[in-house]
Image (cartoon, rainbow, N blue to C red; front, side, top):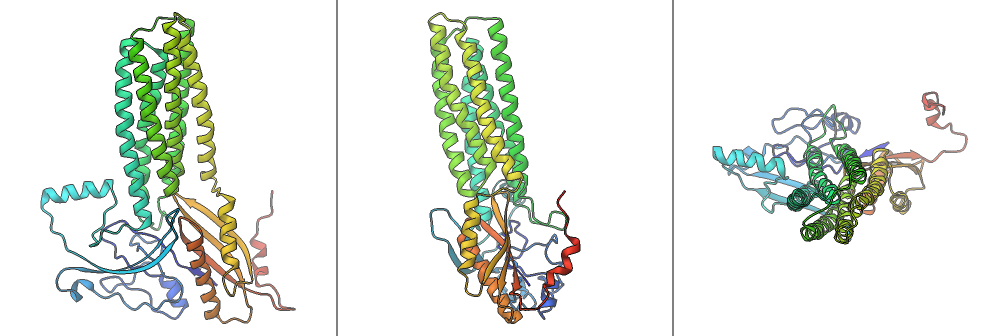
Length: 438
């Protein structure tokens, strides 16, 4: 049997915050299909009317009460169940019950509200509690806009100096800074898409948009490397003097300071929320910082009368960009191919083996969807256990996973009975569906 208890988090304001399992799951367990706020059956998982918290393991849910009628003061009664996994802090398991105040919006306020909701996750709860998934997206969006402002200002200052000096090394650095700032665009789109709920077509949601953004970032780094190499080679073939060397040096230092600050910020936030694309973007910014320092060498060589110093530094910048391109491409490739840190797999397996009633752990799979993890696992339980007992073990196993694995938001646990002597393995009926390795 399987246990489906998804700790998914809705972001739209019009979805009720307390979800239910699919109608099929409730029929199998002797429950009526769940009803929505208007007393109509829901479509189950994968529908467009998604919920923030799905229960698929024997919790009895009757029809959903009409909260608007029940609370005559125009408030929504909210039930929330949060599993937070903040790195560096022990995981918490809390149940919250709150009342959200009603809101009245004028026409202009409504437009402002829609724009705010598009750019940042929004909550109407009194305490304004964002669930972990939305909070991580909000932090990612904030990191993007802050770094975009810093890098945009840095690139603008450098562009002015490029026009005055004609430094090809500083030109390559400026283009790279501008490209790095513009990578906030695909990442911002990915974070906005990632907040959309799963539906019948995108049953896992839109979290993989971050992987597409990572590919766009890798392509941007590639383009900037090609441009820097082309300008450097052109200047080697046609050397020209560089003027305003002091301004070039100041612009190089400004580029290093801005990029290093942005790199630290992006990498820290990206690792905390589990966004490989944001980490790759941070590595991109760090490269820009070091290449800005290389511009200083070119300015120094030009000051000593060596005209080839500037284009040679431009080639060195190209080499540095290529190294970061390799690291970023490897990180994004692993994420696209569903690679996870083996330590996460080991941690999940250890947690499962410690669950009472779990005799063995079978197939265990983890995958990233954006900056959130999902798990699928088969555990072996006592063959004489009742369905209810096996289900309880599956729920306990899922609960252990949610606490043991950072950023895990959903787990599918399948309970297999321990084989009895002389009893045929029921999985043999599936053998003819297995694909032989090519």
